[in-house]
Image (cartoon, rainbow, N blue to C red):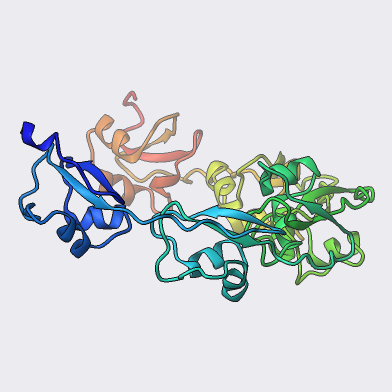
Length: 362
């Protein structure tokens, strides 16, 4: 391999040492030349049998010198760049780009070549905004923080400006912070987020669209802006019942409560709870709201147990299955002795009939 090391390349050519993975095609792309030009510069080299450490000659072309760039910024061509892609990235027209770089060949851009990017013409900043000239190191995020505005508001104020391709000297518009929003009593401040609608906010905060509009005169429900501050009326908890009717007890709603869950917990039904609380909205229970929960009644004891059976008082943990085992009978036999008794809703203190005589012990 030592015969590779002394290779001398003619003028306008670069000596290059082959590395693992190199091909004439990849080298032509990397050095902005062509495969035929590489073959012509290396007549004794087999392109299909390159060896690591082998020295070849790479044709070089002088990188065009940049033209003056008044009122713009220089940009250095990278691999894969095209004038069309550059014009889109920096928000300038292809014609303006060609005009700023006379003599440039759009089809033969060279890596390392410097071209001139003209600055977009600054337009008039709309009302409630102020012009700002981009400095080195500026980003939309840093500018938004510096001027105490949201990133979304900054983007909205500069349609057509690419936040990822800001140019030094470029003029953008900065929204002026408006007067602080003062919410009326009984309401709270809220900052609009992406996807918010007045209907969704009304449902989330237990209020109505009309109440939100009343608290925000001049608001446009169809044009909410991310970062906009509005006032949300605080939901007034419903008036607690003055007194729960006989057979019910007061209960204070907690986080996560639903009428279905409460009916299961207190051994009643949703219908019974709704009946005990006229005017209640089952879909809008509020934490701290006081409602009335029906107390489960104790089922009437059987009037008389049939022959060869005796009364038994339900205890904690009893089930028809455990009672049947205890009295050496079956669940079906218990059902026949106790028509109208719900085996799935036994209550402590309830009296049922079990097989056996009055003299037998439990």
